[in-house]
Image (tube, rainbow, N blue to C red; front, side, top):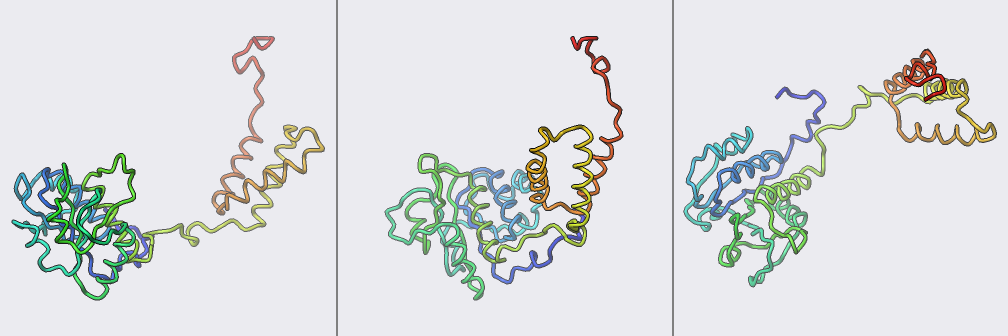
Length: 270
């Protein structure tokens, strides 16, 4: 993909150690791949897999990753969850169910705030995600420092692994970058219309409406003009948009008036 010249380079700078994503005994390569893609979307690259059911490497995972090859190529596979988190200093266990394990429960935004704060100090953090069918067991949750859960509908709480990874990765990056967006509308390329240009458009537009006796009854004209002008003012039109609207009005002024017969009706409009 070609680099967009309008991309905000500040959005590429994340001066925080990113968390690892640990998938515990995932069953489908496709889910590993879509999780990798979600990670890449938000700048995460450390993917760890514990005992994948279908083994590793997985062509299905690579295909589903949709060009997040740098994540797939760096995958680490472990025989146990303990080994997968051994080098981390703070870990979240993600779950949609209440647990008997007495640990603090955080939302994704709270978890991101702590992961970013720890990462800013160079500490290694991670998020553990469970199996597709039944998530993590209590012994696995016990290995984590805190529990992370999402504000889902309790009657339909199960998420696809990639969806859960996406939400957590999104919250982490939003926090780590202070919400810097990759691009915004460029005022240099799309300058706002000057009031003078806008007023000339109003005069042109209203004169065209007068020509077709749009303002009826006449005493309502000032109110209708205010309403129409307010519509365009709220749109915060650019110079290009005002020119386009002027062209539309000019084209309508030059159109030929068709009779009812021309439009397909009979002598009496039947």
